[in-house]
Image 1 (cartoon, helix red, strand yellow):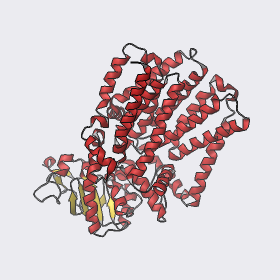
Image 2 (image 1 turned 90 degrees about the vertical axis):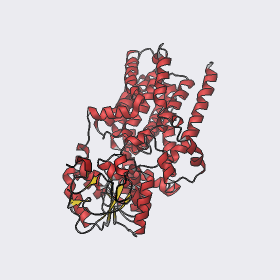
Image 3 (image 1 turned 45 degrees about the vertical axis):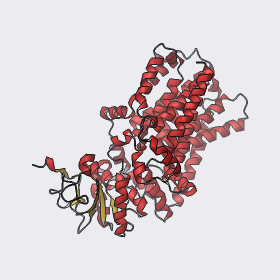
Length: 545
């Protein structure tokens, strides 16, 4: 097949894949992470204050994005997902362009775009609409400015410094999402200093970069001071963030779990390391522009991977951006595609990832028309969850949560009267249009994982709150999906037959009576004192002797 025909096939495949994936992805449910920032925005719109009224360990950059989306596009999940697809589409397009700068042809760039569309669409909902992906979009835009600034043959001095300022401002925007992006940003700057094409300006761009970053930082700081947020932001960083950072679980087990999560895509890391080694060995054989592109992309990958492994929690979404960058690096290696085994290995690899794609999840395809035309029910959104979503026990069951919301509405609940004990239930605050009882909006994960030594402080806030009902999730407390959804002699509104809280008298929330149940979710009515807040949880009855 000629290259022209192959190009037509690949472009058509990209269009087909996007046509299938976009409607399905737009209708998938949001995660608790998204609802946290939505709740922060709503609280601030009602006169509340970030960090004081809703706890947050990150800078407010992600909140600003949510605020812009919710103000301009509305409060639907589709609005946020549409913005996410635009940002990640820009990332995919940028990486394809960088493949061309690595000396590859348009066909290779389109193949990379096809695979990255495939990759992102096949990911868990926990990897979509996430901060690290949005942070990468700002980083890629900054990389584009740096490339154009260094590659232009004629530029006025004023324009050159202006582009330095713009690049610094873009890195600054990314820092407001997560400060860890400083690591890949610094790596890119150091790598470009060694480029022959920019040797004349080894350090001349630093003042402009610093000025852009400082102006972006100052604008954010002015907003925080003006809104009264700054003291509470400092309090979180002084008194809480050290515990949050210490709760990281960096281990070989976590890395193995991530490798299993991403499946064959994880092999891109090994290939990327091999490619960068080949680049280093043959660095004198390439044109200056190609060498510079190799240095910049390799630095971005190494810096991003380093901060993801060494500074952040082992969440899958943290490790999605370096995989996308690794894919671009591998695509930019003619040595690999020229190898004899390339085509059969590539074919096997494609078969290995095919099962993760919406095109291979045939149970989703009948939902495509409904996703395009609407309306979409909670049951439909639940059916759009893929295999990777089901690995996570915290993936919410929207149909059951809808039933819980109906019960709580019938009880006339107001602000502070419902506690979403487990993070999978956080959507209830949004659906019921109520404020949480305290700043720790899902106390279970805060007290039992991130801030174990501050559990008493969290318990004191809950004790002082007006909470009437607590919603727990049995799946997050050790029950399998089957056990949590089982119906016993007491009927579907009573706890499942394996549920045993007999030894938890006086323990929050398990000692409080269950007044409603929807599958895995229990609604406890708080009666009397709150009780002791510990990490203890119900035992499965078969484990009781």
